[in-house]
Structure formats: C-alpha cells, structure tokens
Length: 120
Picture 1 (tube, rainbow, N blue to C red):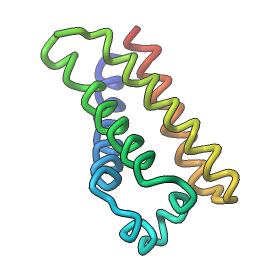
Picture 2 (cartoon, rainbow, N blue to C red; picture 1 turned 135 degrees about the vertical axis):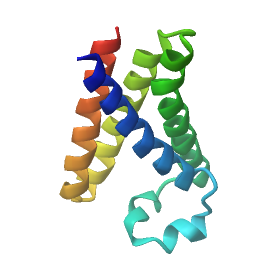
Picture 3 (cartoon, helix red, strand yellow; picture 1 turned 180 degrees about the horizontal axis):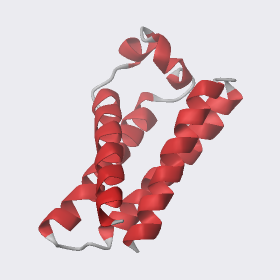
Picture 4 (cartoon, rainbow, N blue to C red; picture 1 turned 120 degrees about the vertical axis):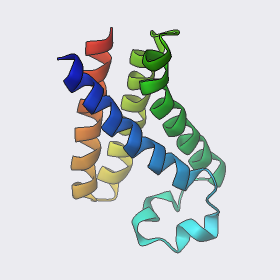
C-alpha cells in the first residue's frame, strides 16, 4: 500500500505544483486571455495568487516531509489543505456549469483524502 500512496502523492504533487505555478505569476490580463481560466474573472488577482501558493505549498508538503523524515505530520495536513482547495474549486466550477472540471476536481479531492487517511 505504501507504494500506491507514494504514486498517488507524486501525481497529486505534480498536478498541484503545475497548477500553482501557473496561478502565482499570473496577471488579470493573462487570466482573461486564457479560456480555461474563465472561472477566475470574478475573483481578485490576490486571491488567485493565494490559491496558487496554497497549491504549491500543498504539493511540496505531500512529498518533502516524508522524503526527509522531518515533520511527517505535514503530509496529511497538506493533503487536507489540498482537499479544501478542491472543495472550493468544485463549488466554483459547479456554479459555472463546468461539469467536466467538477469531475476532475472531485477525483483530485478523493485522492487527497486518500493520502490524508493513509498518512495519518
């Protein structure tokens, strides 16, 4: 089971690291020009950057504490934080009727909860 948890953690970390890395340096103009980021229009750019930073921190928190065997309690904490981010994403995309994105967010939420449970 440990191998499965590592694989899921690695996939989640990669997804959230990429997602966060796109949001943190973003400008309102760059988001407006991206059709996949239409959800961001009603939100202030500062909030989008905070979400991106949370995704990056969560991605690092899924992997680094276990790799270095330091503060391993951060792994389930990071997984729960990412699950909360995905819950917000589900609500945002559902309100916009972006149901394919809701499905992806629900899968990511479920995987984050799986990691949190396995690492507690």
